[in-house]
Amino acid sequence: MDPTCTLFRTKLTDTIREWKDKGIPSRSEFEARAGELLEWKADRGITGLWKNPLLMLTATLDDGMGMGLKVIHRYAEVAGLRVVPLGLLQTPENIVSECQKHRPDFLGLTVLQLDTDTLVAEISAQLPQKTRIIAGGPVFRYDPDFAERTGIHVVAKNAISFLEFLLGTDSAGVSASFIQ
Image (cartoon, helix red, strand yellow):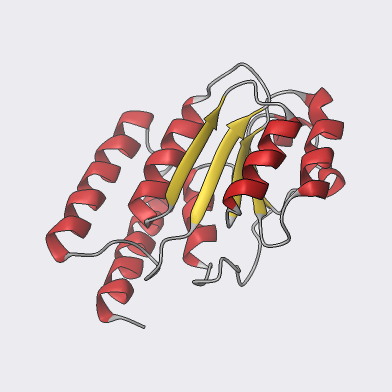
């Protein structure tokens, strides 16, 4: 592995450890740290965790843009992912069509409503084989079986679990272990 990539992985791991020790930071603290990490990467000529950036599409089925998705977009940038945001109120058909067109490594979904399980399962069943769904949102607190029932591969409850997942992901987009 490239020494600069190893250095970057260590930097992210240390950041996660700090957050776990001190508690989850506020949104403004998350934003400030993301800026620091991006500057640190740029100063060292590091593009991200992978030689060839992985691709993530993001979408919501609902009309609410959570602050969580903005933080995830920012830390996807920090990690070196290419991100294509599809936006709010996306239909399953549009999400699947865009995934078939772009063939992303990951589909990031914000799931706000408990009654979207059939829609999420419909999306999951039609994705390209390599695409893994990373999802977050309040539904996972209220329905612990939602992810398994709908074909979601990873539940990222916050930026920490999202980064931990990415740190365990190789250049082919395969993670050593999925975080549930």
